[in-house]
Image (cartoon, rainbow, N blue to C red; front, top):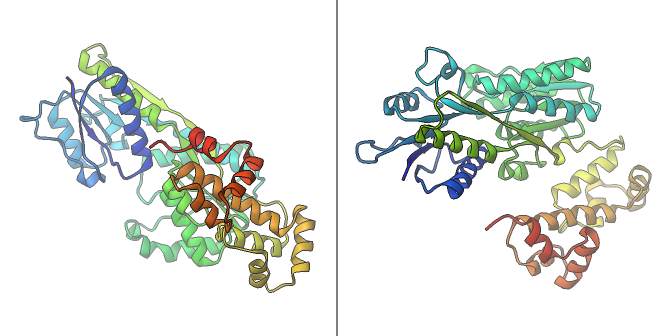
Length: 389
């Protein structure tokens, strides 16, 4: 049985997706013995090879320590998204097979998403470390915008604060306040995108009305917990994991003898609130929608909106009707049902508990509303679209 060491940071969705792809291959063509350490890259170690007869390695090499260990192992190896130093011809790992993200497409998709919304101002917030993959994403983003005769503003990462977000935050707030608006900001990954959203919130900059933010990875834990929720470009990480395992299998069997590369694709933009631009300018309606969204639509009532805005109910209702064509209550119900849909699909919460969150005594009443809205029962929707496990 092949014994394979997997050196991947399992704390991020991008890596968990790669791991799922590897496991999909092993289920089909294994079995393999897998050595996997749960945790960040600092915790990744190769096993003692004398006692653990390893036959191959799949790794994302992010440090000289890991690079030296992989070179010393002298085993068939596949690399994920190698950093620029590893690609230099003289580096001993440059001959390894590799799987890399289609970063050019990522940048192009980001630009086209913002161009569809007809922004005038565009900006990028780079990764706080100099990485070749983020440069490729940004260059592609800039090239596509240049075709549309648009220019891009760069946020300059302060190197003295690159590893300390608390120190960098003040600088980013200052930059955001000076940025021409409305602006579309592209971040190289979701964690960086959430930092931009946090800075906007502290700076009093409204998202997406003044600044729209787009990340990469579609890490649902990061995106859904951000305020507002973060739009992101989904990448087919599982395809990358499957291809890496397939290449390593060929190397270990001796059927693959030359260096090979696989480019796993970007799947498209998953739009959430951070880029959901509203095409009207009534500040009262914008504030009302933001208040309803932040309160998730569950406990909020029309009277709460009226109290928050300190305007008469009649004034708010008239403005809603003129701007959107429907009432404040309909907006609350719309947001509420979207929250219900996410709870049905993404959690195992009992339907009765969801009904209570909505302020409904009867789960049957919620079921009727859900079916009218989405065309299926809550049970059928959870079975069809719910997260596995």
